[in-house]
Length: 138
Image (cartoon, rainbow, N blue to C red; front, top):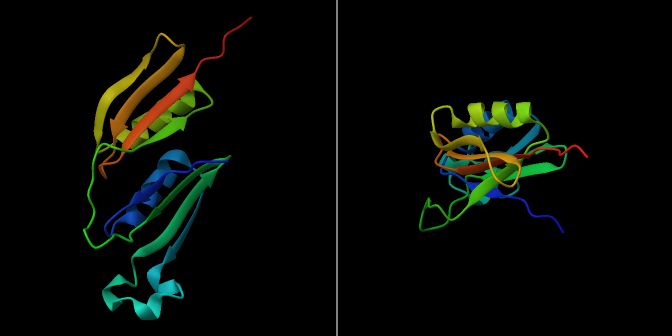
């Protein structure tokens, strides 16, 4: 079983996912409403909205869409994307890039559990937790 975060946007999914690709790397696929089978059933103003996007890299998968329910987009602090990095350089680079234009809530710092850890809110209002568990020499 695997668990993947799925982010919902309100018209700026393409911009956000392109930003995340620039920060994290990987392969980005985007399908717009206009490119899909549901296009004929949707209002014309939605044809450029993202029906589904996937960013993947080495087992990491981040999915997103512009498809918002009737109540509209409600952002809260009840979800975060956790990014476990493979190296100290990677976690530092990702933190720096993802926090651009956002808020560095807790800058990266060494923690008692042996990890370099921090969190941020990106410029799209999404919360990220970044972690690099240091390897212990034996």
